Image (cartoon, rainbow, N blue to C red; front, top):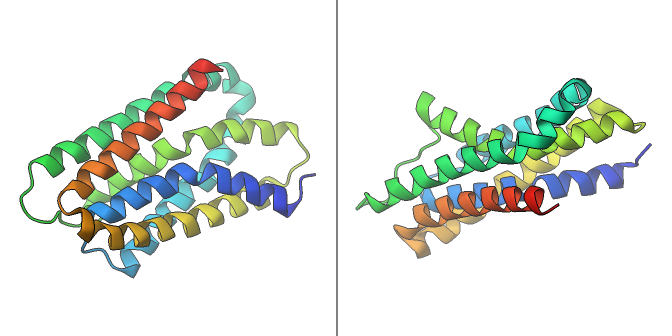
Length: 189
């Protein structure tokens, strides 16, 4: 059974894309506060913890489908959200309003969190083949992602004023690049 350090390294590697997305989101939302960063971190952490469990339980049934299409789904979702952020930033004159508030803002955040955590479903499949306590693994992965995404949001908030209206463009580009990276890694393997 893998130790806590191995699970910690796994959690850190899975949360890199959530950190980058939260960094871009924090840079584009200059009016965010500590509570907003915690909420963003919690949403990213929740989905990053949930998807390995889904992969664990459904992996054997959906192994071929997940392996064949997860990178396309992640790319499509990240590209769509990133393109929307870029378009919105190009059309703005003033600093962007906080997008994580309200029902629509929550669903945008959730779609981004789901897109950055799809790769964790494949990890869940491999966890099913190993002697791993799924609940501990999910808590470690989700906890690390929550901390890193919250940190990314807070760091991005401080970088945002220096970037001005280009912060939204940067956030969108980061999401598109993450999606392209996921697609490239799967297609080149």
